[in-house]
Length: 440
Ligand code: HAX
Image (cartoon, rainbow, N blue to C red):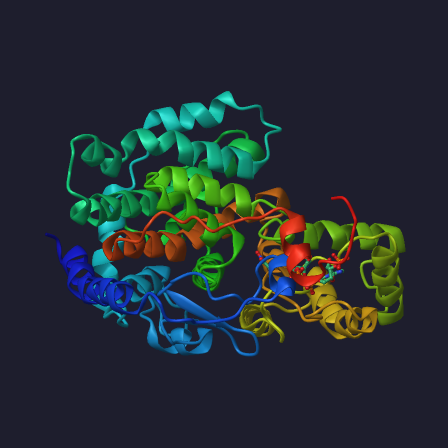
């Protein structure tokens, strides 16, 4: 067994035994009560899932295996001493639970480079779609079409014992992650650069290679992509994309099916599409106000107009967070360090001053603070990636790291098929308000 896989097996087997022991010995213990409000607001706050890669605190934000983003920036291996950490290192941390050495990260980069070959039929599937198919549609379809390569599916068909499911899942996960940059870049060049594709450079790291294949070779962009791929990688297990991958995977659907499904969830405006929506909305505002240097008052009025129209202010609010997202702050610090005088970045900073008091005034909004999507588009735009319909694909490439590490862990723990119970609305009403006679 190769080294990284063996390290994963060693560490995760212990946790797998613990999962099975808890199930056998403590299944009757009550963990939490559930209110009707939690059920009617999208199951918020109910502890229902086991996810070991990261944990989200409403006040503090995300921690990956206990490490905050700023701690990762300090501890994970980097290529340049003043650069951003390599996403390979974060994947190793989420999978194995230890901060990797530089050598571990190099091994992972090399491993992914050897697995990065994308079968031709995947590109054919992309090419068969009309150019006006959204980049996320092309991305999900391409991932789904790669299920032909699933090693798990072949092992399952050959009758392999369930205790080895993790092994072929691990292989699928590593292959899929290795291939995502080429698929993403192919879609980008197809849609926005006259189908002039760029071959991968196996000497580059995973994120650097993605930038390279998209046509961007400056150190500035590589630095941004490494940060971007780290901060978007995981957000515990309950968000739509992570939960979808887990749910679909729980039926023993292969990794390609599970991840394609996750990507269709990420494509929604309340989730990853928000990173496009933010830039789209800012441009709508610039056009409506006829200036790209609006005053705070003009922005305030435009926000109120957006709310009056029954729309959301994209990039603001969160289902769990109750403070400014540390992923927003990491990007703001990046901009403060490397970007001067950019009108869109300036507007994003201005919005951070103006929007929270307006959303707080509305009353019903739980979190008036910005999330990760409020900043990311302005950075990409600054460096020349202006085709914002593509931004969610970049989010999707990154999100694979956490979600697919989790899927591998799901398999080694032997997690069961997910199957919560549902009831008609009347069933709930009869429990809280039996005297009502409404017939629905
Ligand atoms: N602008 C206007 N209204 C907002 C709002 C915003 N930014 N955020 C929440 N609200 C509204 C909700 O639509 C909801 O209204 P109704 O009661 O009329 O349905 C009300 O405030 C209560 O919502 P909440 O409990 O505060 O928030 P939810 O958990 O229901 O939703 C969302 C969380 C992130 C979906 C929400 O804040 C939102 O729509 N934000 C804008 C879109 C966005 O930025 N999405 C990306 C989130 C981060 C992410 O997943 N990235 O991928």
